[in-house]
Image (cartoon, rainbow, N blue to C red; front, top):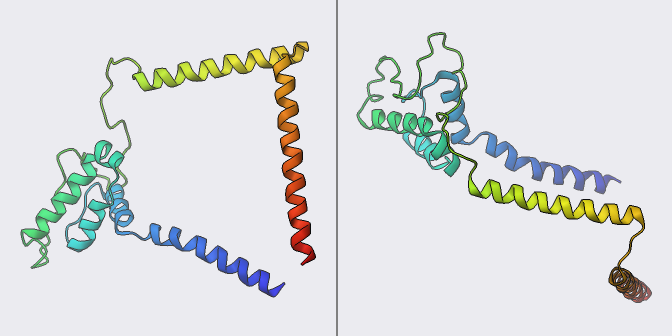
Length: 182
């Protein structure tokens, strides 16, 4: 029992380690600061941390959260310009897309893009059509089963698959018996 508990504790620690590391990554730290302040203080993070945060931005984040990448680039530019060398007390520089938040709290969320009059994208329409076809086929099959209608090939296929499953279970059981007897 002690071995089992030790193995279980090791497994849980192993599974929790990547989560803990992901939570402490430079990207998440910089993003948390950006979400809280609406800007990134250039002197709070080192250049490698800011570059790592910039590399951690996903394609989705780069497309729909360009204001975050702009803020990181702005902080990197200010650091490269010597802003943090003398530890000056200049106020934060906000990016053009970031609305200033006078209260100092989190920036209010809202849509990142303006509404358009565009129709439904073609891939979504195709997926909806495919889902409708699958639902129609499933409903037709369910009604046929409830009414007691059966197709002769369905009986043959059901019997063939049942027989194959029976033979596979039998072969597996025989192999297990042979290995157990050794």
